[in-house]
Length: 177
Image 1: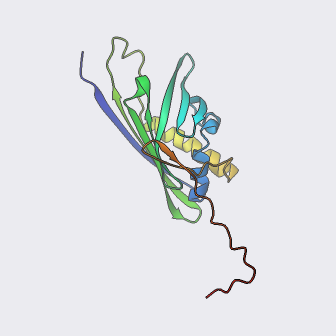
Image 2 (image 1 turned 120 degrees about the horizontal axis):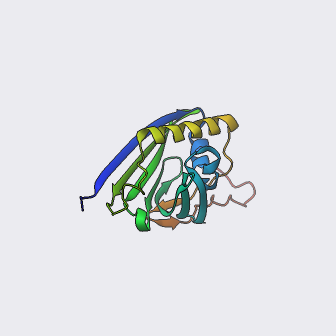
Image 3 (image 1 turned 60 degrees about the vertical axis):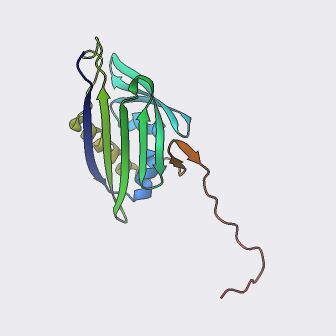
């Protein structure tokens, strides 16, 4: 059997919304089928675990993905689980201006050859990622605001508690300065 082949794809796009709007919408995985042609459905099982159904027509696949790093307004990184364990990806967000954000998607997959390898592997191409990013751009710029947000932090696959705002002083007229 031939050795496994690594495939890497990196694509970027600019969207005309603030970085927090782009990031917040991206955290709403369940909405992906609304604007991404290849995503049929996403189920959020836990903050760091999702089940994806991707494909088109009769050629669909279901896989699990674990979010391993997530930092609000900066990065979401994941890895595939099970048969998709060789799949890793990340999406980064960078503010270019108050209402302009650069989104960069990086995917890396290792094809594991099998007897049915050629029939059951859909290559992730730069063109495919570009078209899905263009659909995200059209969606988020069209609505102009996010449909929800999850602002939690994940480090090394562990969900960290969200920091609450510190309580305000309840002492009336507390001297300042």
